[in-house]
Length: 605
Ligand code: GCB
Image: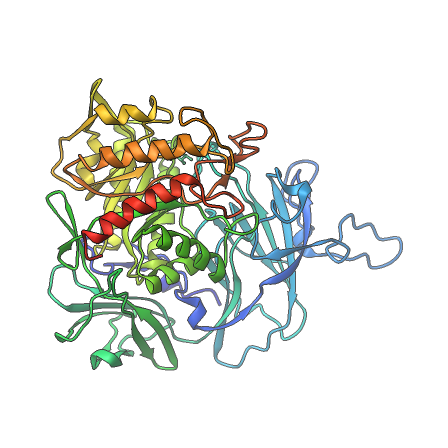
């Protein structure tokens, strides 16, 4: 059985938004469900010509690698074999697991065998945390679904296809870059391919809680708003919300579409989530045989003039950008442990905020940020050059937004949804991104909308924020590289900033490159001294900007990039990290740490 047609087609008046938007059907909070992990060793076949998919006439084959065929006798011709192939670890990108795959872009076929005894009346889904970039998923030789987009979750129901013994799950993953995709062909990060996040079998009752949102109503004081969407339900099913510590228990019936929307007033004793006190409440939702439990923090986030208000109080975002790369090994980050190390470094730096650049990161880091009290900027890879006129591309961007919002809408840590990074001004781009902003607000009005804009000079000494996109944003993100791509570090001393908007601005990037251990004068590129000098001048300049509400220097750690080739310095790393790829702190780390220490002393977050 596929997910009920009903839930797939449900166009729901979404949680606390103003107008309707398509609800994405993906099971939320899988780690708190009944799961069987399929992580571990998977057999794989490298297929640069898509030979396992296309015939020599370039038509799809009916006997492709998804059949996992074996010769039936000595005369039988089968020109591939999963059984005889090597293995890759899942989760994990392929590039960092085998030297020969370091630069590989194309198709890899993965195979996992498993047994599963599905009890009568239960349903089973195979859930992928992410697969970069396109995935075609087959079970026992049959296609069960496809997905596009490298950083968001998806699942397919296999209730009627799973066997008690000998299931054969094959996934064709392809990470070729495309002009009309999100992201497109040029990025300043590694195009890690593969099953980069957890893969699980999720067992649920025949009617189950597919999606829920339990958040404070931004419009009403201490009101907990709840939205629940059941899958497989009859109208009028009972739903119970339980927050024992707040003595909240509320029972309600779903409407004809299996949805329930309701609100409950929390008492005065409710503690708001904040970096100082990242209080999480155990929240339980029950319906029939299904119970989902979560740890949810309650907070509000809003703007007032040029301030960002957390729980009604102005907050300055002391941030740092992070790519989803493993801190202490090569490749994509995917674990709780990776998240702990990255966020501990950010915390030691004095940060209360991180920008998870440039695409949705894995869920482990959001859970960790909730627990550690770190506010998060989350974004989709609408980066640099996108086909602004292409409706399909816009749909894809919206789909990625829907998927990440559905997955993360209960994480208190996320305060900002970012629509795009450094996109060139044009009418088409304005239409595209403003429509993403509207889509985001339709799905979630408990967070603010931002984008990382490019800088404009009004004259030689004045920077002016006047990008027309600013009109559609709550918070203006601005990337600038004064001292690196834009003049020497001391140039920052003579600049003043103006904005046509009465809105908060966050410097979403600044920085410069240094190779750890490379020392020299502070005007010599790639030395730690030069990088530290940029941070000294930048931090002085930033203090003079009246509408500055936060900052996210670029970046916590050196990261892989195919665009950074300089031998002995870059060697395919972007070196703007404050910490080296091996985990060593550079001089600039300490400059920023001192600055954040001073800011911290002046604030209560
Ligand atoms: C940027 C981009 C970021 C790059 C960075 C750089 O403006 O947003 O993705 O990595 O500059 O290092 O040039």
